[in-house]
Amino acid sequence: MNAIKWNNNELIILDQRKLPLTTSYIKCKSYKTVIDAIYTLSVRGAPLIGIAAAYGMVLAAIESQKLPKSRQKDFIINAGNKLKNTRPTAVNLSLVINKILKLTEKSDLKNIINILLKEATDIDKEDQILCDEIANNGIELFKNKTNLKILTHCNTGSLATQGIGTALGIIKKLNLNKQIKCIYIDETRPLLQGSRLTAYELNNEKVPCKLITDSTAAFILKKEKIDAVIVGADRIASNGDTANKIGTYGLAIAAKFHNIPFYIAAPSSTFDFNLKNGNQIIIEERDSKEIKEYNNKEISPKEIDVYNPAFDVTDNTLITGFITEKEILYPPYDISFLKLK
Ligand code: MRU
View 1 (tube, helix red, strand yellow):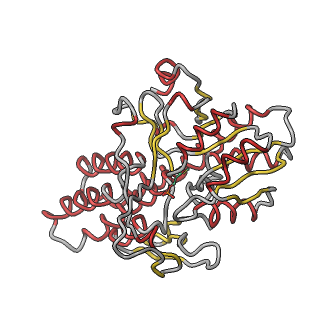
View 2 (view 1 turned 120 degrees about the horizontal axis):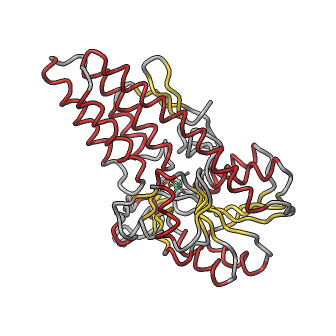
View 3 (view 1 turned 90 degrees about the horizontal axis):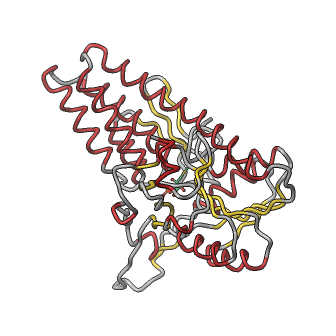
């Protein structure tokens, strides 16, 4: 099944915290269970959390039926605001919720469940198409090239979207075309989306790959003839500054130093034209336990202070281009981004 699935008034979420060792599912019957799944990263990846939240709103609409009519819309609106605040960096979450909140305000209570369900299903289906379009544009960069070596960070595949993925979608298509020699997968500290999830996906799809620690990446860029680094994004500001999983910025600096093209693959919905630059992007900070514990055991001194941002911001000057569903956008971004508006 996909990473999430709507079935009989329930949202079924593949629990990504347990992958790849255990395949188990969380059945969400309330929007609060969806909030919990998003917060704990059972469901993750910018596009996927937007879709999960859309279904979370349908659950809120179903739950609201128990209340007197006069309180139903307030219940749904309150659920939307809570869902929106679960993870602040990925733009998809607020984009989707704001759209559904508007729809809620203008919809007739009688049909609200069906209206919100149709919206969530449309967003879900659209994501699959967007992934394919991004991949089709991305493979054009490597036309007639074989034995490609590409490095990627975090997980941007079928566990982060409802389709083949963004950066990983391009990689999967290149592999189907037999163009890949090796994909280097950053393990992606501290929650290991690379070593648990990307390695799992690429292994399942029989893509030749090698898992490396994040701190090995710069050395590989120096040592191997890497053709490109391709990663995803959580929010892209108007000037091209891009928030993505922590470690992306360092990777981009290393790629620039070694003259290796550095691409961001993302749908146009990840561009936030309300923000002038990356300084305005809110960076989610997560629990210190994610760093201080290993296998649920404390490994650092109890008293030690921790800084644990989930994302960083890569300066636009380090980015060779943005692979979107529409086309590949190159600098100057103030001009090329106009094509997305
Ligand atoms: O904390 P996560 O696992 O949700 O972070 C995911 C990423 O940073 C991805 O690169 C990004 O969301 C794009 S997924 C297509």
